[in-house]
Image (cartoon, rainbow, N blue to C red; front, side, top):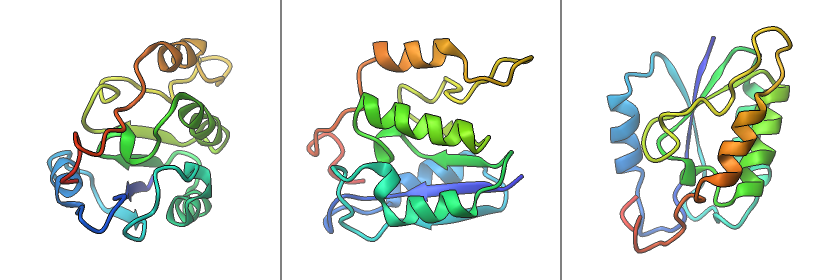
Length: 140
């Protein structure tokens, strides 16, 4: 199983320092890192981002995708659901290491059928979306 790390910042004034700290504290073994070019827009659908696309091409069933916080990957409910569908199809785990989604296994599957749990979609649709205020996250 590979540990695939995804990092992204929206502007040239931001850095990945906080993401690096959160991911280092997570103790991810032998990470394979995919980092978007600085300024990759959060408005671009995650499945259209170049490095996330490379990550998905590289990934094999059983691999885990690690992100520091959900908003580094997605900004809205539909993007979350789209990414979860792709991860589920590829049999990939998603590990979020900080923020509101960090305590949840959003790629949990039913033990007999292997299907994505319907409660996962329910949780995603009922929780507030990741914050998108650049003022809140200006340094990362």
